[in-house]
Image (tube, rainbow, N blue to C red):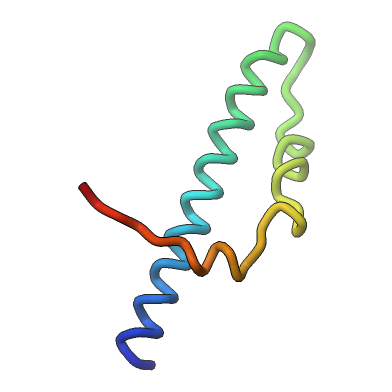
Amino acid sequence: MTAQSLLQTTLFLLSLLFLVQASSLLCFQHQEESLAQGPPLLATSVTSWWSPQNISLPSAASFTFSFH
């Protein structure tokens, strides 16, 4: 594995991690709002965002990160 492919793999994993964390925050906020209506359905929330059409691997791999 070359340094470039290692960097691409690392950036790809970071982008997936970012997507998962952002989606988790959205699900958590949605659950808080729905507490008044009844118990939160975690499985439903997870399957609502963790669907193949929501994640495009080529575009996720092309993310660029800038640190300030």
